[in-house]
Image (cartoon, rainbow, N blue to C red; front, side, top):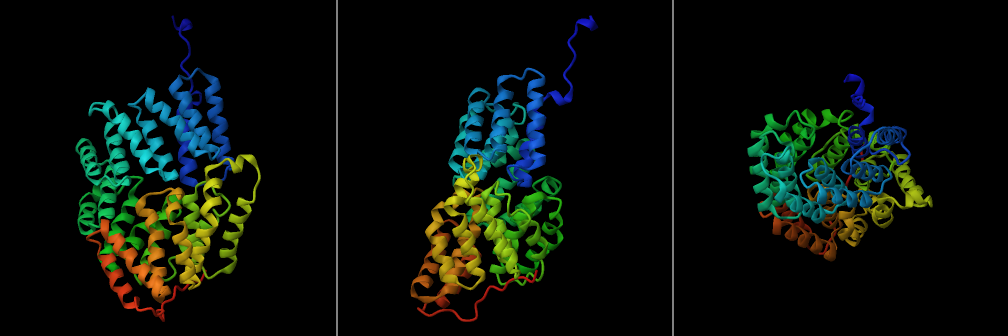
Length: 432
């Protein structure tokens, strides 16, 4: 009998574990298309597929992750959607779709996938609470906040330490402007998310609440005691959170000292990767904050070089398509802000404002560009930009009705809404 029993496949013969590693490396490290570590995992995945017979579901996920490795996120998400049709209870496919649509900035598409598979989910379905948490996040990103809270609480009812559901509820509060409630919620659930892979980002949300509430010292402590500790071990995600956070603190007139030094060089080292446009945005924010002209010029030169490439593999990538449309304008706008050319910054962002979602990320994260726009308008002064700055804050208050930051911005805008420029408002760079 033993001689007739086929041998159990060895671990290296399974493609999906390698798929997951590759998927996480692509999104978490922001490696270049030709990155050696990514190419090595691609080779291992292809070897595993050829070593044994994989079923159709496994082959489809492998095909999707291969498209990811080539930078073709649109093609990848289409393949994942096919998996969802045939295997709607597949939590892995749901998460992959969530991640891909997030980096494509396609919130409705992300929500629609979850809506299609949700009728197949019951509490007894393996990993169902994670899918509920994803439904919460995708609903929030589609501005359906009530549905987001329903599914967020449903996920936490099944598993109270579900970090994605906790994170989704924090997003709802952020977008509604209910920051006091959000801070209380995150503090009360800290024991459930503090040791998860979303801990840095949950601290980021908590810190945004404190900034909104005007609690500057507490907001600084969140960075120093928590967020900064993830730099170097939290991959590109920690660098994104940190650069966003430092910029937001400066918008609130908080002197961050030399804290920028922790993030400028690590992000600058990614300047030639261009795998995810969302990361390029944060490279721009960080390098613009440096007083080292060679770093700023190096980031811009890397973008120009990338966009001039004619390699069909590069040109076919999602990143090249997106950055060709808005990469250089946004990089220029952020540098204009630091150069105190506020009208130029405002005009450039305004012109590209309704393309910003192409960068990917969440609405809360992309809000950094709205803040650049508002502050640039206020600092530019003059009748047009001062009036625009005031109108943009009123627009913000339509959804964030309880936003204390927006109320402060409205007061600041009112002081400059006189047709005159505002003296003494500058955006100094960090010695680096």
